[in-house]
Length: 281
Image 1: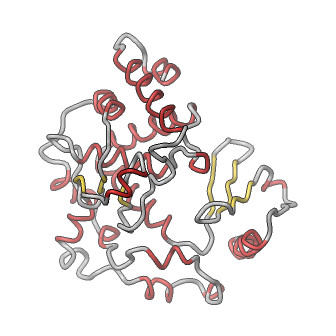
Image 2: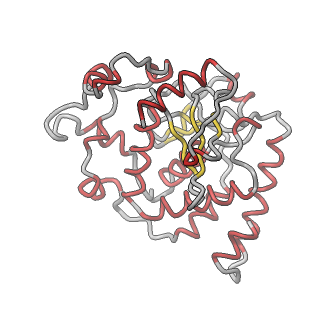
Image 3: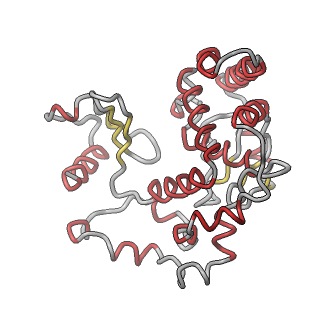
């Protein structure tokens, strides 16, 4: 199936549309207008949304990093799920139309939890880099070594150029034992509830460059400061900004600010149930 999908992706980049015959691909919407082409697929039985990337390694590394953060503290996943659900119901997850990508929102949540007076979690990447020599006895293999380990049938495949831009030499976090890392990354423990942290996140105004890798604000050039409403440093590639889709002077930005304010007011009403808050936000 993966071999067939690889062929399909080659066709997507050269054609405006692709027709799928199998019923299991009902509702598949190939999207090639974005920086990274992918297949967006919704499973008809359970309604689960699936994005399939072919010949592009970076999303798998990004997903691994985020999953590790989710394992460090359950509140991280809970808050991310709520924020993504809320943003989806408000049509704020439409990067092609000047709104957020789900990746950008998740990074914003993780960064917010890193910079609390008592952090919920500290930088996993900094921890991994500081202990690189002792983590499993070796550095994570470079991008070229990773390519050599791929299945034989992929040897002639062309990898997406964006894959080559990522900092594949800095993947030490993939060797981290998450359970052991909790002692250093999550203590002393932040005792706030997920609801309290969520309310603070909704109120937070991030006007500076956010760095998940270093768990702190970074300086940014004047041009980006005037152009982008949210500047988020990609943890695997410091040259990319996942928040680049939201422009400061766009018509969409005031609506984003308005929706955040409405959500904050709803969260302040402590008499509301969790379900009602999700509906009202």
